[in-house]
Length: 155
Image (tube, rainbow, N blue to C red):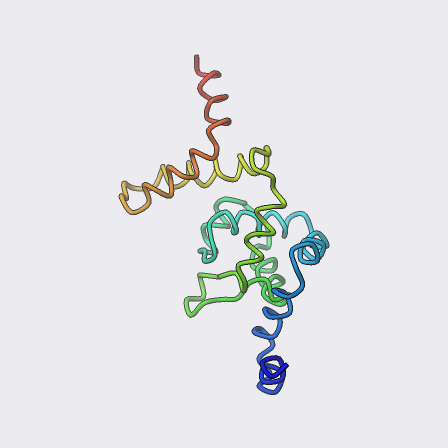
């Protein structure tokens, strides 16, 4: 009770929201996320696949979403995301959002494989960067069923 009272007294709404969300549990958060538009939910799912911190420009490239800035600002207003000191970078307010967004796309599902494929091929096509090699390989490995289909098409 003391921690909650301190947060309330300081008026730190973002921290307060994060504490409430972490106590709410995954099922409640999933219901909350499902109330978002499909487009906004897709943006958050792609961002979650990138990790807790992501560049907004990369999300724009991967999703080609119209009004991305509005969707990001709505997610910030809902306490799901927050901007970092760098205005071109956002982060999730709590790791539980990553978990819930990942779980909403079952492993091996077509949408999840497609997101990993998009991220992996985008990173692959960047200029040679050894720092991204593990990340690129990880995403392409999780999209291997799609890579296998593409390989069969080429044969």
